[in-house]
Length: 484
Ligand SMILES: *[C@@H]1O[C@H](CO)[C@@H](O)[C@H](O)[C@H]1NC(C)=O
Ligand SMILES: *[C@@H]1O[C@H](CO)[C@@H](O)[C@H](O)[C@H]1NC(C)=O
Ligand SMILES: *[C@@H]1O[C@H](CO)[C@@H](O)[C@H](O)[C@H]1NC(C)=O
Ligand SMILES: *[C@@H]1O[C@H](CO)[C@@H](O)[C@H](O)[C@H]1NC(C)=O
Ligand SMILES: *[C@@H]1O[C@H](CO)[C@@H](O)[C@H](O)[C@H]1NC(C)=O
Ligand SMILES: *[C@@H]1O[C@H](CO)[C@@H](O)[C@H](O)[C@H]1NC(C)=O
Ligand SMILES: *[C@@H]1O[C@H](CO)[C@@H](O)[C@H](O)[C@H]1NC(C)=O
Ligand SMILES: *[C@@H]1O[C@H](CO)[C@@H](O)[C@H](O)[C@H]1NC(C)=O
Image (tube, rainbow, N blue to C red; front, side, top):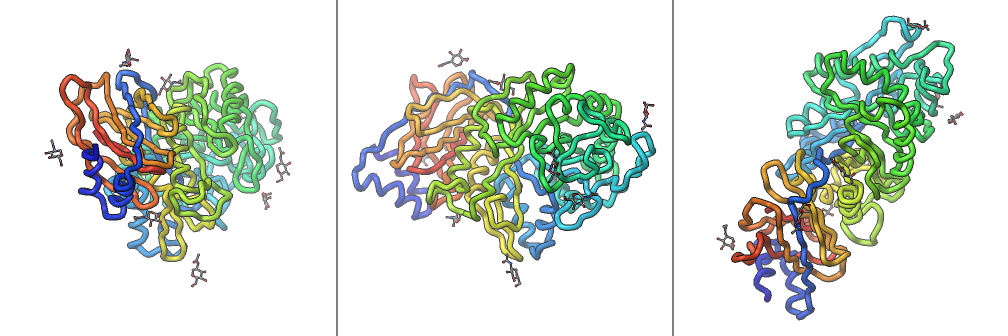
């Protein structure tokens, strides 16, 4: 009965091995959870996982706050390497709206008013974009697939409040009146020009474009408000402009509400504007003010959770210490629930790496030091293995606190992510149906208080007449991803 457990001791470092054997030597009954995976029950297609380095956080990664070149590489490895890091595949960049780079501002490609919405635009390109050009080139080298450029605001002169901060709306959408006129076309041209600069000057193909961030909020930094009706009014102009620009492959993302409930309301409004919903490739919202707990009622093919973090808790690296918001295990559950309850295809944390005192980032920079949180390993438990194009498949777990998600990758491999929220180890008896692959030895990747993605091997289970499957062991308060 101990047979399929002992393999951990062959492959794990001592601490982990003794962890799992502790229970055996004390003869504690280990529950077995039956997990049925049905690869014929198919849900959303996955785009992937990611972070942002907007507001000049890219510059911090690039050494602005004292990070040496070797530590810059370390940070990039942690975020984007599939061998030693999280293997993230999405990057959310900020399209600037400010007149300068003072503080952490994102500078606009058209900082001064050209003289009205119909005047010839006066664009400028500095080749740096707050170090986002550098970061994006690096990220692409690691294999990042999606470059999502998102504007927090239009430039001041295109808005009702004449400022890129403090809310305000795009002049020309419903319920606005601006003496200077209707700026929708100018804003659409502006966004397309940003994509063009990246393509023509830097050789970078932006894959996704957004024009809002948290449109339900009025903030003292770059912010712009919009109802779903107003977003629809702008999409009427943006979608055809993008199509006519030669960048018709760039996918439009909207609407970046602060929480899932606001996202639901904005979507309902947007749906009343003919053509608006159909012009989107991705419907996006953030997790802050309400969790992703349900799928959006939409015909848009993809949903992304594009920004979330624990902004209130002080910096914390632990996996599972006090059950705090910022801990790794809490984030492993959040990511998994967004995938299983809200059908998201993408899940992005707020910042990848920055100087911070809260849990706003996965990695904390301080002068030339790099501190990695367990949240990064929570991401890695998914993002290393569940790759773009993977399809989420059906799962049943026999024990409620043992939460399971499963995916079939494009190469036919199956990934099973198991979080044991319970307080004793569980054996897992996993059976896969509706799948035409075969199960060899299965690699397992363990994260808990003593392990950050520690690799092990599980035996192939019972052969014979049974369907393919394998046995494993998931220690208490731990996450294991099995790669079949
Ligand atoms: C697997 O899912 C498919 C499609 O939903 C269904 O037809 C089939 O009965 C399921 N198989 C099992 C073993 O539940
Ligand atoms: C989940 O997303 C897929 C597209 O990725 C869609 O076909 C499916 O209808 C969605 N399911 C729900 C419940 O929203
Ligand atoms: C925009 O608002 C900020 C913050 O309230 C303020 O400091 C700045 O002077 C304003 N800019 C303009 C052009 O009014
Ligand atoms: C947004 O906040 C600013 C103060 O920061 C305030 O002056 C302005 O009226 C607010 N706008 C709206 C639409 O509430
Ligand atoms: C801009 O051009 C449009 C279309 O010709 C026109 O309807 C509009 O009045 C012009 N706006 C301004 C501010 O000149
Ligand atoms: C960075 O170094 C400076 C100078 O030594 C020091 O004053 C500061 O506290 C350090 N910052 C952090 C975040 O450690
Ligand atoms: C795992 O990562 C956490 C967070 O960075 C760290 O505190 C811990 O020491 C690491 N554990 C191991 C075994 O590397
Ligand atoms: C599976 O693992 C066992 C134990 O390490 C080993 O004896 C066996 O050869 C492996 N099988 C394959 C197909 O790798």
